[in-house]
Amino acid sequence: MPKKIFTQELEGMRRRGRHRKRQKEEVERDLQVLGVRRWRELVTDRKKWKDFVRQAKAHSEKKKKKKKKRKRKKRKKKKRKKKKRRKRRKKKKKNRKKRKKKKRRRRRKKKKRKRKKRKKKKKM
Image (cartoon, rainbow, N blue to C red):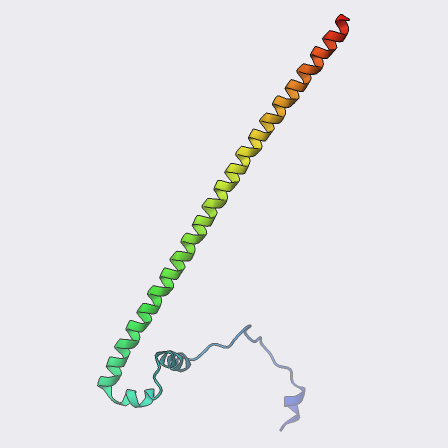
């Protein structure tokens, strides 16, 4: 081995995260999910392979639909939560306003009482 390899620095940057998978790996994983073990034998028989591909398509479509449903459900749930939060906030705001009004009334009544007391004292 040349010494240059040990002394030389590498150029460029490596991508962050996991390396990208090859298509073959993805296909193998999908086949594994579908429960096919000897897929290379299936490929040699065209008719069987065609049937299998149809099944796989149907399976992936179901999967997509389920995913969409889940996503929609999640979105709706989020919306409902948001709505509830808004209602609660409105209610709190309303209650705050009511409390403030009550406080103002109490203050006014207190002031009125004080004034009456002062007037009584002045008259005596």
